[in-house]
Length: 473
Ligand code: ARG
Image (cartoon, rainbow, N blue to C red; front, side, top):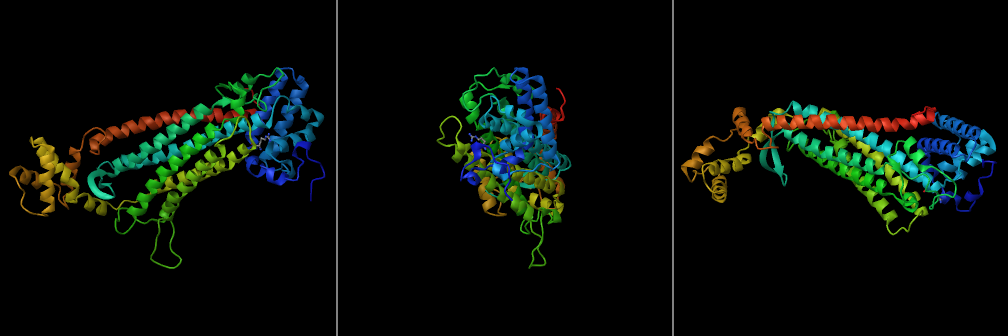
């Protein structure tokens, strides 16, 4: 049944359905309403509406927010977008004064504001998932500093590390992702409201009030830039794409380590499901999907860059296509991070298999060469001598020094010999348990600092709820 109330003139066109963004931007309703409440407050302070009108507008907007929150709001497809839906409903609730809300405002600066507020919430939500994952990596690492495992280059056994050192490598790269997200939010923390359609207003508006009340550092410097700037969304998508790439690398290791060929981790139910045909199968589906989701996240970044490429200042309708990739990527990464966290918490290393692999003499070829180097042999010479010793597979060592060093190499079944070799890898940032203990303490204080940043971001996010609840801050 078509709605009997006609839509406002600006949305009456035969292409209305094509122009509509409601399906996507209705998820921004909450931040849109908070922005409108503050805009109405500003109109009151600037005497652009009377105090009574300002109160009618803010009360009405809060009533609309309550309808949206509990699902009573009747969304109208014929009204193009979230902004128009809200304004039309507001006017139904408060009467003609509702028509004053859009004074000195355009949907161009309005949507730009909504996106900044959304970005803040999205960063807070992804960042808290990342911090949780970092905590899980730390917890697993702190109990595995003495569990040796092979380290790989070219996916070939290379040199020994420990499970803790391996898990912490993932900690640090996820931590850089977290840092990037915070930095993106920091740069995005500028309010565009008051830029109007593109050139501000002839009325005495106060963008600074709006910015401060919504928790922004400041208001925009240039109205043309303010309505067209989507850099924060591009940065967010890049951060998420790289995060997804990092998660996919970890997932690939889980897939490989869970194969019978490696057998480093047990195929627990948390890794995924079985096969509908092959009764023996227990597949690492969850890790495989994490690996695949990176494709979508990269695609979302490319989509937005392609939408933006070549756009003239200031607002172009193309910009409406910016939201779907962002919302999609945020949802993707939220589920990816939750899944990676489950994987990290439940990974069951097979200590026997890992220990056996870590005792592989090949892993200690460099150690052998370095022992010769410590005795004064030039590295190139040592490299050559050890290389031919390994190639001769059990042949006699070329020199007495090599024989002595080789006799001290780790042996399969002798865990103490492996541990002794690991203790020697104590260079800064290396895998020796002592070095890893130091690394763990650095990681712990890093995570503590991140938790503090997260709390101050959460405080900013809570402002939206406070504004909608009618609290003064
Ligand atoms: N739905 C639009 C968007 O997402 C809102 C801004 C519309 N502005 C306009 N001039 N038609 O970008």
